[in-house]
Image 1 (cartoon, rainbow, N blue to C red):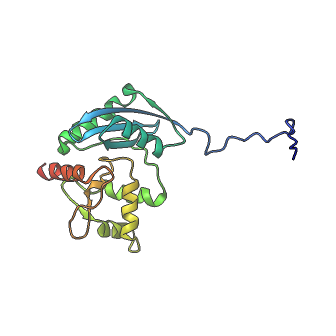
Image 2: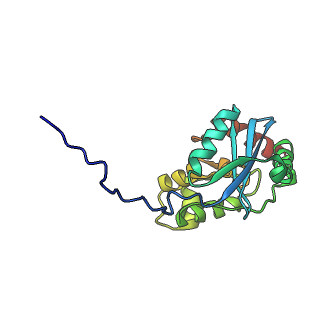
Length: 188
């Protein structure tokens, strides 16, 4: 069987779409802290990510997977002030964490995250209670998924949400970190 291949066939040139073109530039830095490693990233609008982990590679991969359409560059000078505030907060939660945030998520996720910001340090709420603050129809699992999708640890304090019986539920950045954060906040 002879195959004929025509190399002169014109193939359409793929157009750039909103999914293939970087939407913005994110600058980030990574530092060692009492909780392991912390990554702080910001866009031109504000801090869009605070990630906790055990290694730089893990944190870089997490950031890249959360913002696949962004150009990501390490630039400590761009996030220096934000990183200093985050590190100060980790050491002493009583100082509060006041950052300009660029919260990226679905409308539902952003509503959940706004409510999380209203939970004061040293206090916890259940997924069910948080759901009722948003809508009587909000299911606790939907609330848990929104918490798990939160890319801005500490500033959007999803660690303050526990199960209805008070048990520690899963925490994207490790339940032991959640326990330590809550312990430090309770002492404040």
